Image 1 (tube, rainbow, N blue to C red):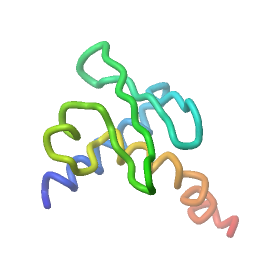
Image 2 (cartoon, helix red, strand yellow; image 1 turned 90 degrees about the horizontal axis):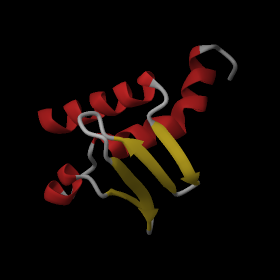
Image 3 (cartoon, helix red, strand yellow; image 1 turned 45 degrees about the horizontal axis):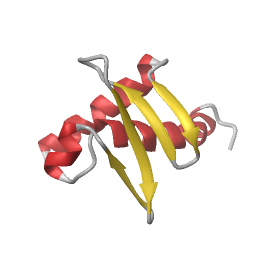
Image 4 (cartoon, rainbow, N blue to C red; image 1 turned 60 degrees about the vertical axis):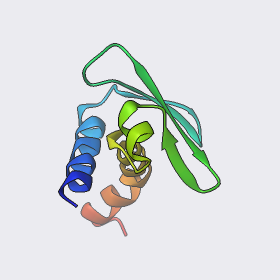
Length: 86
């Protein structure tokens, strides 16, 4: 469980850092690697997200890149709630 929590936090960090995520389509994103010059592709297939990074390939569970996309997509809703717009 601690590993999943850390991946979630790292996903939040990617979103907070800004300029890391490129939206290709509603179900297709690219994220800059945090350690190399690689770009990782995150896609939604059959209502599940997958990433081509080594962590996702090894574990077959959401990686920090998948969590970053999930947070990014919920960000407008989160901001509305925190700003009292809803």
